[in-house]
Each structure stands twice: as structure tokens, then as C-alpha cells.
Image 1 (tube, rainbow over the protein chains, first blue to last red):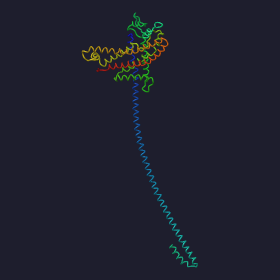
Image 2: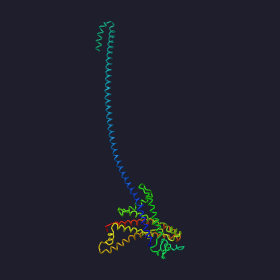
Image 3: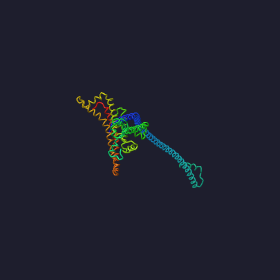
Image 4: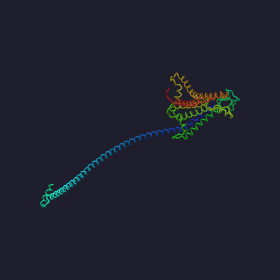
Length: 156
Length: 283
């Protein structure tokens, strides 16, 4: 417990250390820390910005996709109505065609019937004549009977 | 260690004596051989061990921090830079809490120097008490104390350094007139109380650096004393030696707290005193 020159020496070295620390230690360290703090703050800000942008982009994408969906649905319904329209048209055409074919066929049938009738009439008249000839056996004035028979067959 | 087997008293005395270089009573300069000689030297002596260790540790601190500060990057810091930044940030936090954000280029480095330097000096207390002194003794040096903060000269030297700074800021911030009149007008601003105020303020002024320095010294001195007393057990038989070993370990663990705490207290008091010097117009 002797107070002596050591105290003065300690005081001087203390001051020298503080001055040295003030010049070479404190400023660069605090500077680096301040810069880092700034960089981190900027980074965080940028991240927040990016997040906002992402949100906006997501919203835009949602809108776009909804629009696309709506458009697609419209197209589908258009296509559907167009398809049913085509089917209807085809149906109409088909029935028309069928009608036409049927009418054609009907005509053919009618013709055939007429022809058959004609043939039948001729055959019947022939048969009748044959029958009559056989009944009469004898010759009959063919010509006179021919006329009569024609009249008869026309009546058939 | 004058004799072959020193008594307990001699042992303790030896461990509490600094290596002093000074002016002998006969006028010649040299190292003091005994505590009595140091006392006779009076003021004109210097504790060589205190100076070597305190300056050495100070240089260690500054060299370490300067190297880190030179390489300091604002990018991702390395572990060493991190360590330094933790210290700087801790100091800055305490300054902001107590001193506020007033612009002052001295208080930061001052507090950092105090914190780390005092911590390192206190840390020497954890080195076993006989290790280095005995090595020095074998090298022919009679006394060698390795904990500078157990020397009141060291702690008072620092506290007076802080005190001078406090006076400087008082004069700079408040002006010499207001600073001088403050001695008589505080704390009771009545003319008939001026003498009483003056005594109070002078005592307050002197008590600050004294308590500031002696607080650190007292804590570390007491801690060192206990280490020495524990070390005495080693020469008192095997049972007590083992017990002493355990005690030393336990006290060292507890002492880690004191070491950090006292370094912190010294720093925070410095900040508080400087803050008071900067405050104007209250009380």
C-alpha cells in the first residue's frame, strides 16, 4: 500500500492506451458494424420489396389464369353449341336425305307396282283369252274378240 | 523469501510486496530488497512488476484489437472479429443506456479500453499465486506481483485519469464559471448554506476518483489475499493440501464472476461520471 510514481506511470500509460484505442481500434470496428447494420437493413428492405412484388405478380397471375379459365369455358360452350348445331344440321340433312331416298324408293316401288300390275293385267287377259279359247274350242273371230278382250283388260 | 522455510506471515507479506525500483534513503537508486525499503523510498519509487504487467496486457489488448480492426469487414465477420464486436457492442449499449447518444468521440474508446484492459489485469488473478512469482524468484527477482489491479497505484492511476477527464468535460460543457460556482450553490442554493455546500461538494468531488479506484483495488486485493491464504494450506499436510486444492478451484470459479463484474463496474462508473459531467442545469 505505497502510493508512489507507479500511479503517475499508470495514469500516463492509461491515457496512451485510450488515445491509441481512439485512433486505431474504435473507428474501424464501429465503422464496420455500422456498415453491416446498414447492409442488413437494406437487405431486409429489399426482401420486403421483393415479397410485395411477388404478391403483386401472384395476384396478376391469378387474374390472368381466371381470365384464361373464363375464356376456355366460353370456348368450350361455344364449341358445344356449335357441335350440337352441327349435329342438328346433320340430323336435318340426314332426314331430308332419308326422305329423298324414301321418296325415290317409293317412286321405284310405285313404278314397279304399276309395271307388275300392267304385266299382271296382260297375263290375266292372255289367260282369259286362253281360257276362253279353250272353252270355245272352236275358232272365233279372233279380231272381234281381240277388241273385246282389250276393252276387258283395260278395265282390269 | 528470505529464509528457507518462510513463516505464514512472511509468505503472505512476500506475496503482497511489489518489485519496486526507487531512490534509497542513502540517495542511491536501485531495487528495494525489503518492504521497509519501499516504504522509505516514499513517492520516488516505481512498482516495476505492476508497470510491466499492466503495460504488457494493455499492449496485448491493443495489438489484438488493432489487428482485428485493420481486417474488419462489413461483410460476414470471422469469429475473432465477432469476439471484438461483441465487446464493442456491449460497451456501445451501455453508453447509449447511460450516456445517451450525445456525440462524444472519447467515451467509447475510453470505456472499451477500461473494460478489456481491467478485465485482462483482473484475469491475472486466476494464475496460481506461486507460479510466476516463484519462477521470477528462481530467475533472481525477489518480489513479483502479477496482478496490477491489486496495486492501488494502478487503480488510482486510472481513476484519476478518468477524474481529470471529468473535470475537463465539466469545464468544457458548463464553462469554468458555472463549474466553479456549482461548488457553493449545490445542493442547497441559499447564500447562508454556501460554506456547507462547498464542503459537501469538495468531499463529493474527491470521493469519486478515490472510491472508483479503491473499489477495484479492494475487490481484487481481497480475492488475491484469499488465494494466498488457500495456498498456505498446501504446506500443511496432505489432507489440508487436497482440501486447499478444492478450495482454490471453488474460489477461482467464483472469482471469474468478480473479475468480470469489477471490470464492468469500473467501466460503468466511468460512463456515469462522464454523464454527470455532461449534464447541465438539473439537481
